[in-house]
Length: 236
Image 1 (cartoon, rainbow, N blue to C red):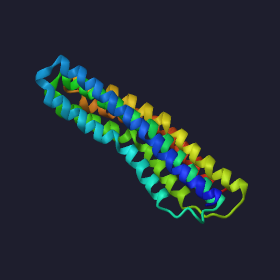
Image 2 (image 1 turned 30 degrees about the vertical axis):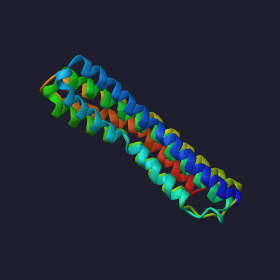
Image 3 (image 1 turned 180 degrees about the vertical axis):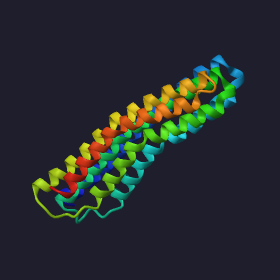
Image 4 (image 1 turned 60 degrees about the vertical axis):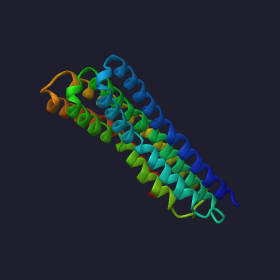
C-alpha cells in the first residue's frame, strides 16, 4: 500500500472518531436533563421521553454525515491512491469530524432545554418540540457545508506536488475548525429560544424569528470558512 493509501484510511478513522463525539455528548446532555425533569414531574414521563428521543434523533445527524464519509473512504480502493489524494482524504476526515463536533453538541443544548421545559410545562410540548427541531436544523448547517467540502476533497484529482497536497489538507482543517463555533453558537441560541417558548405562551413567533436571525449571524462565519476552503481546493 502507498503512503497515500495509508493517509486515506487514517482520514476515515479520524472522521468517524471525531464525528461520534459531538452527537454522543449531545445525547448524554439531553438524557441527563430528561432524568432531572422526570424526577421533578413523574406524571409527565411520556412527554419528556418523547421530547428527548426526538431531539436525540436529530442531534445524531452529524455523526451520520461522518459515517457516510468514512464508509465512502474505506470502500474506495486504497492501493493506487497517490500522496496528493491521500492528503485529500485526510483533509476530508478532519473536515467532517471537526465540524460535526460543533453541530452535534450544539444540537444537544436545544434538546436538553426542551426536556427541561416540557418537564416544567408539559402542555406546551407541541410548541417546544417545533422550536427545538427548527433550532437543531439550523445548528447543523455548518456540518452540511463540511459534508460538501469533504466530498470535494475525496474526489479531487491526484495530480500536483507538495503544495497541492498541503492545500487539500488545509482546506479540510479550515472548514472543519470553522464549523465548530457556528454549531455551538447556533445551538446556544436554539436552547434559549426553546426555554423561552416553554415558559411564556404566545411568544413563539417572536422568539422563533429572533432565534433565526441570531443563528444566521452565527452561521455566517461558517460561510467564510467555506469560501476559503473552496479557494484552497480549486485555486491552489
